[in-house]
Image 1 (cartoon, rainbow, N blue to C red):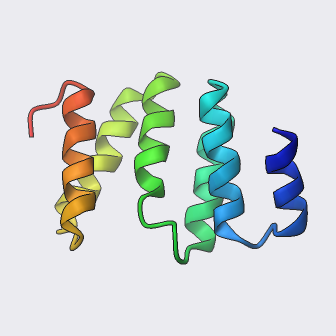
Image 2 (cartoon, rainbow, N blue to C red):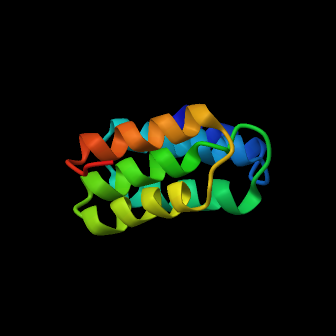
Length: 101
């Protein structure tokens, strides 16, 4: 976690810094904190953030906010996502959550 914090100290306006910290927090099962990092990453945006919503959905689901996680993925799918790989990942994640797609 120290490395993620050090990266953020150097680049707090870099979306990937927030994404990296969020991923570290997921691995530590600190899901609520991870969601906040992914939201910050999404807010900044830019390259490498296209699939942050998948990480956010995973963190939400594992934190017990399962309906919110499902809605997030469904919203993406309803938006006619243009990237077939992201569509496939969102569908696979929903299936992992027990939702028929």
